[in-house]
Image (tube, rainbow, N blue to C red; front, side, top):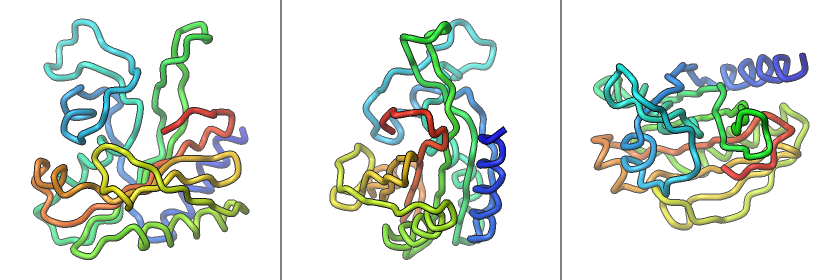
Length: 193
């Protein structure tokens, strides 16, 4: 199983870079997934009636849920270096179910001097490990500082890297800078993050 081997190899590399793995829930709320992070709503699987109040959707990106681990532990001493490698669900009209499941990798760094360049050094190390040369293209993305966010391409894998906007951090009561990297690890996808 090539995907399983890739996931195991990436986990090993990221752990070697000093990150701690977290596992978050696949179900979440619209409020947390989009509004709290100043993200534009993107197509996602909406849930019908659920017993657990507040769970209204299936995640289509990892970082809002990965950051829950940081939010739950923000009273602990920084630095935080967290990662998650798990599945997300995208809307895909041409599939039998109307959805498609993909693996994504999310890295989160949080401390007083966390920066784009610090995360970029980890992404460069991951790319070298994977035998790829990364490219970075500036983009604009809600919830992130303009000029401090980029589209990242590593061979057939792509995603983004960015410093979270202070307004989002304030709304989440996070007292230090946070940098996020997220990319697709399912090489068959050409979907944008």
